[in-house]
Image 1: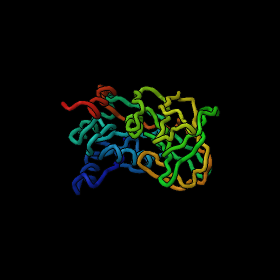
Image 2 (image 1 turned 90 degrees about the vertical axis):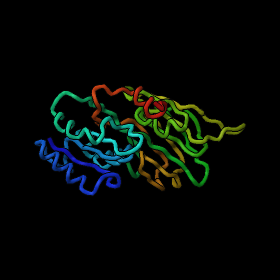
Image 3 (image 1 turned 180 degrees about the vertical axis):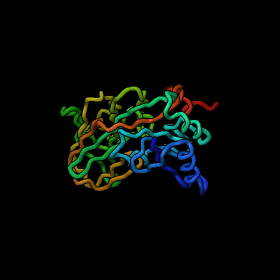
Length: 258
């Protein structure tokens, strides 16, 4: 088994990477950061999202195992003390592999991918965009921005916008608005819109000054006047424990104080 490492070095001891490589080799695996079968991620949720961007070209062939070194650890079922257990159990049927389509935003000059969400925002002036769903006109949006998220990302930025939390077992997209302008002249949906996997969403407008955020990455000054969103064929494969439960994770992450 070929195993790679993606580490947030600020949260681990100085010799941590060498110790992990030694563990991998001692357990009979190969250390390979270029073409891994598994990637062990040490950090928080942001570290994992960065690892997804690094391995985009081979993303569907890789399984990610996240070890919590952050605070919320929404993507992680494991802690650092379970590394030996995971290494000795990779070739056994002891884990749940959860696969999730990446959200794609296609523009004239670039194609972006995000596991959580892709959003457009204008920090300088009101963003105006026509919004289409499956080529059918929905609205002309005016406000700070628009967000398209996956079911996995529904509990991230989308949640802070009062969007719906959607079970990760459902392959859907969700469209949400950021600070929409609504008055006697302008109006928009003002509600999250959940769409099936086969749908597409299109924004049309002047996007020269917008900031495009895809997970924790940023792109500025798009030269495209049209952005098309859809769930791509690229998939992220996450390794969870067999007893992983979405509702339990929601409760522990956002509700429980026990």
